Length: 301
Image (cartoon, rainbow, N blue to C red; front, top):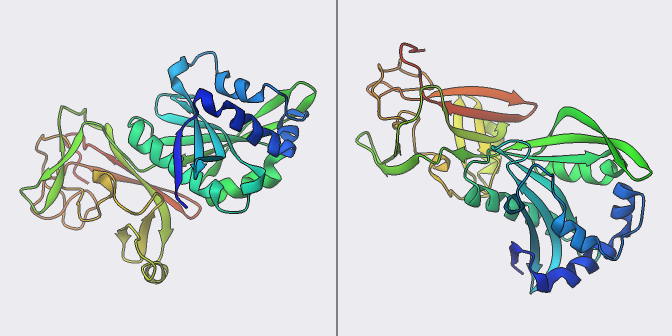
């Protein structure tokens, strides 16, 4: 059965209300009360005051035209490069069947293809719901930021803890074209400032032995970082944008301005190539994130 993700429409409101009421325990854990008769309408309307109406979307996950999960999603919150997941709830009758994971995967695909400026997904887990929710979101690749804030709903008082997931992202000014070096490369369609982030690769760090095991079950999209260090991209391994094609090398042009060639073996360039981006490596536990930036003039490794 294929899962279809689409915006909730007026004809779906009754099904949305039934989904919310199917799992009263969730509502009680985050509000202290059982579901109310207008919860579906409230979910469709509520958003931070600072956000315009078009920045909020409520998406339904449908299987055989039946609503099995709902997601509340905010664009550009709390900043322009972040999408915020306010809710992901699965119908009680469909919990434990993989619909939560499948819905999240479709949500991430939606953000990557529809909101090109978003590099990070963020959510908050309330302590009263953490025993159930935290494990799920950790499995989807989210990590706690260490930030927390007081949470209050009517008489319920708790703590909300923030989690982030960095997405594989490409600057909207990049496009894929034939490269004079070899194969296809990344090219800028307009001027990009020196030092500006042009791409972000995010995934799980694995050894060569671990990679061999993963490759027994393709497709797997990986990038070699060092002799015994590889990045398994955290998103759907089938390439959907130019940064996720492993045959593309960092030397394949970022801003069209010529820079001195980088030393052989340097992560920002190869012998005979133009050195046009740098790699900033940051590890979080077993996660590894790479930021690709244009190189300021005079900085040659």
